[in-house]
Each structure stands twice: as C-alpha cells, then as structure tokens.
Length: 107
Image 1 (cartoon, one colour):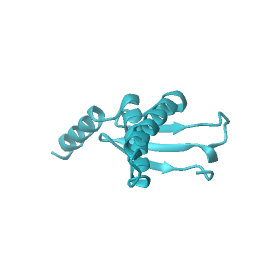
Image 2 (tube, helix red, strand yellow):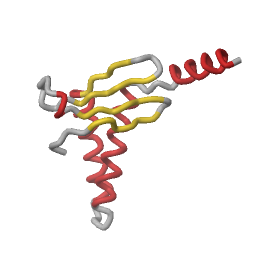
Image 3 (tube, helix red, strand yellow):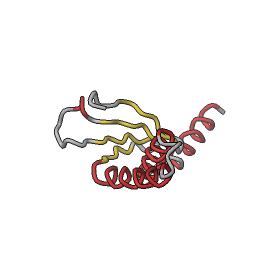
Image 4 (spheres, one colour):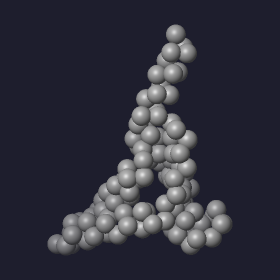
C-alpha cells in the first residue's frame, strides 16, 4: 500500500513539474506584482508593472537554465555568465510552484 502511494505521489510530481514556460510566466507575474505594490499610488503603476514583468520574462528566457529532475526542476539565473555560483539566483520548481533557493548577494 505504501509503495502504491509513493508511486502515485511520484507520478503526480512528475506531471506537475513546471517547465521553462511556467518559470517565465512566474517571473513575469512576480516582478509585475512587486512593481505594482511599490507604485500602488502612481497612476501608471499598473502599466509599469506590466512592462517590468515583460522585461523580466525576456531576461529569464535568455539567462535561465533548467535542471530537470523529473519530479522537480531547479532553475538557475546566471546574469553575469561566470561560473561563480555565489552570483546565481536559484529556484526550485515542484508541484507547479516555485521557491527561491538562493539569491545573489548583489540583490
């Protein structure tokens, strides 16, 4: 019985493992929400949020690398193109959700 539950859980995680497009959408929405929250009183806050979200999506498409582990994925944003892991931004994608694992010191 436990084995069947474990297999079912692994299948659900594999099916809900978010892909690259999901990560781009997450980045766009997250940045747009942050900009809109900071500029809530500005009449153009919504527009700036949308533009910022679009720009974030473009950057993520260009600089994100996905390591797919079937039931989860790790997304790495390497903006400087160097091999130093201290300046990489990492996210865990699992069950259709994203969680920040590490953030560069410069942010």
